[in-house]
Length: 400
Image (cartoon, rainbow, N blue to C red; front, side, top):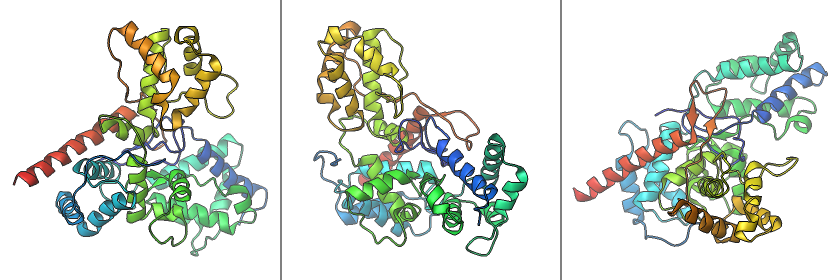
């Protein structure tokens, strides 16, 4: 098991969750903004969808919990509690407790955290300090001012520097930041919403995703302080991680595409397949990253959009219709759109075969925490291996 959590969301969307020695092609914007805000406060004197369609019927509750408990590592504390929380996540999301679903949740959890509700991040304190120093230097903040900021007393009596040196988990770093925001004058006004910790918990699910999901669907547990804090608990992290992994309608024929989506964002594998078809039909090389349209603030059409427009006459659609369909890239039903159907019909004919309707996105994962090159395909493949191993063990248990 390799674990490498993230502070920054990938470039595709805030929901993008790279994994295990997780996350996605990344912009460091939120982290940089947060660090800049901390330094600036000191220098300025302020410092102080509906789920999947009906499918197979799952195991009975007792069988599901017992199966999960037997599959969990023998050294894991409170295996019964882990099994109950994994099963409850599926039940409350109205997802069947099939071997496929149970093993999918377990495979991601094992990959992301090794079954730790609040996993430690190697060298987290150094990573955080290096990022603070790098950002402060980039915007011209003297190191003396940074040290002054960190010398302030925090809510637990220790200085922020002492707490920063002691952080081992994302939860601790997130709580340090929230404490700083609450205690510094104008902190909440200037820094609220810019907490650099973007993922957490046993499945390393995105906090922004969890907060959004909780507005669409009732969270089944009492909220002690905030949804952000719930992500760092075992039950909350498993619930939101399961929702991100399974609680959306997709026509995938293999679970590996959901694993890729867990890392790259919902429907990324489906969208990458459309990009592949557009590239095949147009002859334009495209990055198969699942981004059908450019992000907010873009000055013009993106590469995928331009390549699709080049096919307008051949598929009998205008640019407005194509753009309208591409805008459905973050939701279910893109496969029923005219653009999807006509692009694939044309591309299949040119290729002389049916092109894949799902493709694992080709995304390099970037983060200050990574010490080697990782990709979405790497993540999906590793989780898929764990998933297949889990299914094999269930088959063996049933046979025995």
